[in-house]
Length: 454
Image (cartoon, rainbow, N blue to C red; front, side):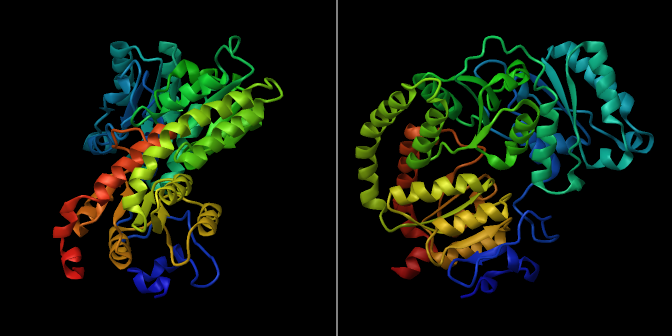
């Protein structure tokens, strides 16, 4: 069957590719098709998912209450200290505000909230309606910053400006205003910033511990368990490590251009990519510390000696089972394809909300013949692919869960709402255990599609 055979909307033909069905060509990073009920979020939501985990900052949504409600607690984002980010604040724009403007209302809200909560900084998010009525966020934020002596940062994230990637860009531009304003005197020569990890279930603490054992200092978490003061001095780190490339790659590029901080794209999901990330960091610092490579090898050996025997138990049952992947960032999808192979499963569909042509080309290279590769999909397409490929498990986020369960397919939450860490070597074990318990559950014997095959 051609890629067009499963396309619900003809206009999306070029955003779906089947490996082996002609030369690779993908149209991506474009606005979602009207009427397709895309799984992708808006610009405002994109900015919120990046900035929200900064735990000691105030986050104020300038717009109708629905925008704040939609993005409240949008990431799990565990904090080891303050929890101001868990509160949701809005200026709650009403009809008269929209007619006459709401700059004064925004000013009063900021003053009250800063006085009450004493944040280290404040982020003010612009929504669609603010972009239409033309409130000057920049001027209001500058006025409040001068009065309260803290950074007050406008996030130009009007939802109508484009797609979710535009929100990532708005978040990076807002954060970059903090970078370069802090003291770097106590930062080691062997130091990194962790970009693009949101500490959904405590993963960031696992990764920081690996680096500590290697002798590497972590300066700033951007943005999981993030702190304003750490971001201010992030320019003092020797290296930026970018995991979720779509969300924070622009910040890494700006820091390289302005402060000369190099960056590496890494992934902490799966055994191969986790080990490779550690080895790449060790390789970067080996001239400054010749023993770091051996320390890293010993760390990986210890972790794998525990992990591999456990994985083999799950592999026996999972070998030959089929998986579908649809996640926010394409870089995560690479690691998931490798992780499924490690436990004997075959990936038959893979896609993302925000992938680039380069991302999808790389996915094309590492996937098997017949694999469906899709950009910015919608529920109808995803449902048709899951049924066609007779998948045993679907890996996605909160919006994909109902699709899987309605079709009687196992589901693994690899996005905002998960409670178990899936990064690092221990994360791979957690992932294998969760996949095994989902795929091998006896409940699937009773769903219609399984009964028909019996």
